[in-house]
Amino acid sequence: MALHLFAGSVAEVIAGLLFVPMEVVKSKCQVQQQEHLDLHTNLPASLSTRTTTQVIEHVYKHEGWRGFYNGYWLSLVVFVPQSAIYFAVYEQIKMRWPLGLATYLLGSMIASGISVAMCNPLDCVKTRCQVTDHHISLFHVLRTMIQTEGYVAFTRGTMARILANVPLTTISITLFEILKG
Image (tube, rainbow, N blue to C red; front, side, top):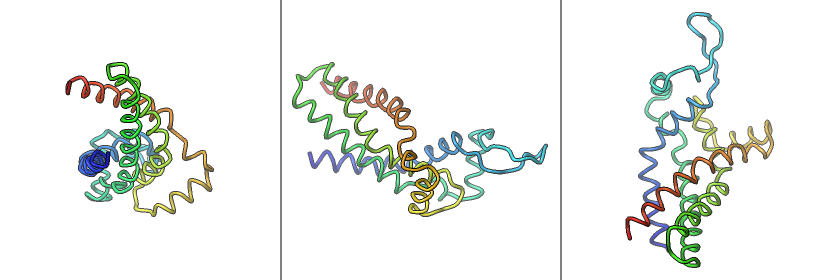
């Protein structure tokens, strides 16, 4: 079990180098509504009207390469425990249920749902850190979330994350289990 946890952790660290920049751009495309002036009307416009390429250019221009890794360490704080929880639950299910397609499907669904739900508060903070155009401290983000939205801010998007992650993980792990024989 320790070897699986170590391997999963190393894989998350390396994968983060590739996936965090994509996550930063995706998050900015989805949620940013920061002020900038529309060149034609001189009125505030939403960054959500920018294309992905424009968001990439904006990040690079204002934050440099570092901006693409905004929240990298925090993403490790989210995804390393999420992977550890997932595999701990999944392996326990596999030890208790008869091996086969139903176990792979249901076990993966259950493990994914639990791990995502448990780590969602961390993901909420990570996302807030990633979408800022300036570097602010983790504690400032936490304090602001609690003061302006209350503790419910840490539960936002839980169902959306579960709905996005469970099918992806279930398909991947089930195919892996079937192919490895």
